[in-house]
Amino acid sequence: MKIGIVCYPTYGGSGVMATELGIGLANKGHEVHFISYKRPARLTSYHQNIYFHEVGSLEYPLFEYAPYESSLISKIVDVSLHEKLDILHVHYAIPHAAVAYFAKEILLTKGIYLPVITTLHGTDITLVGLDPSMASVVEFSINKSDIVSCVSESLKQQTMDYFNTKHPIDVIYNFIDTERFSRKSNARFKSAFAPNGEKILAHTSNFRKVKRIEDVIKTYDIVRKELNVKLLLIGDGPERRMAEEFCREIHACDDIFFLGKQDSVEELLSIADLFLLPSKNESFGLSALEAMSCGVPVVSTNIGGLPEVNIDGQTGFTCDVGDVQCMAKKALYILKDENILAQFRANARSKALEFSKSQIMPQYESLYDRALEKAKSTVY
Ligand code: GMT
Image 1 (tube, rainbow, N blue to C red):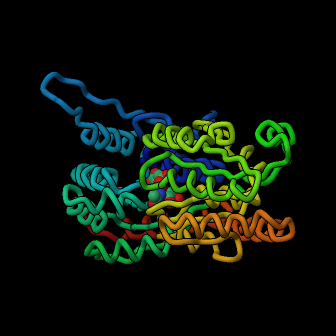
Image 2: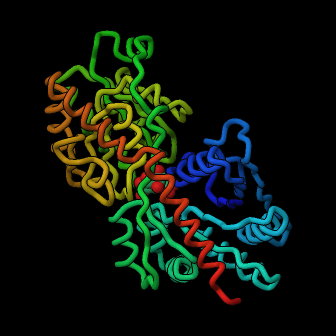
């Protein structure tokens, strides 16, 4: 099958999932064409069957903002015509689902029906999508997609609650390469951060407000009063400066490590004892899954799709948004007893195996088959 994938190329979860899916499909013999404004961050090396089409932006003195959407539509049409795409899979509704609809309409005038699959990832529905400046376009373009999928039951429910959806929505969970994300001992790393055998807490994200980094640090601050702990903060984004200032305020800079963006997150997760994810919104929580796959229990909020991944009392614990006392108490419960920690570690890894690439990826392939069937039976 020839598959076009439109995604954000950045470190965000939707771009990561789109790239991992594309790589997996290419390994299975499909021809994959990524279309984006930059090479996806996770597409680091050459892969047979993978092509990347960069979308340029047209600069002109009249434009205060370059019309990126128009350039993207033209690129999709161009790639579809010349590479003879069978389907187009767009990740993140804004603006990709709307752009896909436009490209599809252009292709129809040329006698080509390009089936469109839209995958909703989270903030495209729960935050940005709900904004009145976006909502009508999101609703329209979801309804115009041939097939819509989203990454948790919770996100499906929210999409149906917020928008007047006309078609069923498939739930396909995030997936993970459970070989890559598995616990590998790294004594050198461990002793660099925790030379005296301190426990290590970790958090990875793009440091946006929705991640509530301040709650990671507040939780850590409570835990460290009872236990020798270090904190690894992996990633970067708009809230980093605030977080750094907060660490200085509480005099914890020697024990909190800001590691910035990292490509081999699994190496750092492998030395962690507990993962914190206190998000205000989280449709699934790919970063929690990555930690669990490395045998790291998770203390997270109970929001969105998180309880579908992080099972309360089994793979970790879930608390209300902002309840740092609860998060610290649960963290201490797990960390203070080696037997409890070992049990939670094993549970986390075994739950993560349910989301392995080999289990989830075929679900996308069957969506593609359905989309092709639909295209065959559509009169246009
Ligand atoms: O929140 C992020 O880190 C980025 C964001 C995105 O769309 O790029 O992630 C969303 O998609 C991920 C992959 O499906 C989910 O695992 C994340 O839970 C979701 N983030 C939110 O809902 C806040």
